[in-house]
Length: 244
Image 1: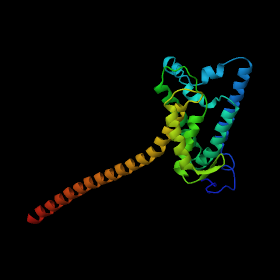
Image 2 (image 1 turned 180 degrees about the vertical axis):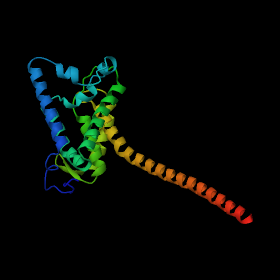
Image 3 (image 1 turned 135 degrees about the horizontal axis):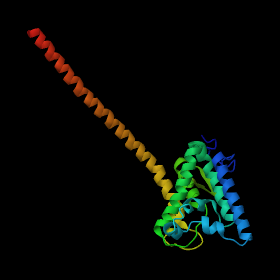
């Protein structure tokens, strides 16, 4: 459980970094350095081979791009804000869920964002890179779990739930226009996956509970039928013996 469950401004962030968040930051930072060295050498290997290009996924089956694009970033500010968001919002989720569940959720949102982008525009040659889709998914889950926690937006305090609602509305409107340097369709895909994951978990839990109750009642009815038939047969046998 997180130890940062408070609505105050006495500290910054969730405290110490959690294991998976730390590993993801190291991987993204290392990949970013490799991108820099590749650019200095005059190459474009990382962006062209490991960034998300829907055309390459659908026509040449570069399926690994659905995953690898997460670890690439387009500049220092891009990776800085993504890793800051991963630490601020992902750390508490990992502490609450555990490392395995958090890792699964991170990649569900990241790959989900890539799939939405690819399905909406399978012939696009635009390259998309960055962990923003996965991190916005983390932000959605954070709002489900800590809706009234306060964060600072520039200099203004705001509850997480209102910040996420505003971010979602902006993302939906921006994703209508598939242009610019920021790919909001990937962002939207990550947020939708998080929404389905958080709401769907409750739905499946309710369905499982109803199924288990139905199954128990069915077994109970079968047992009652068997018991009544057995009891009736015993009564008939005793009646025959008494009559004879």
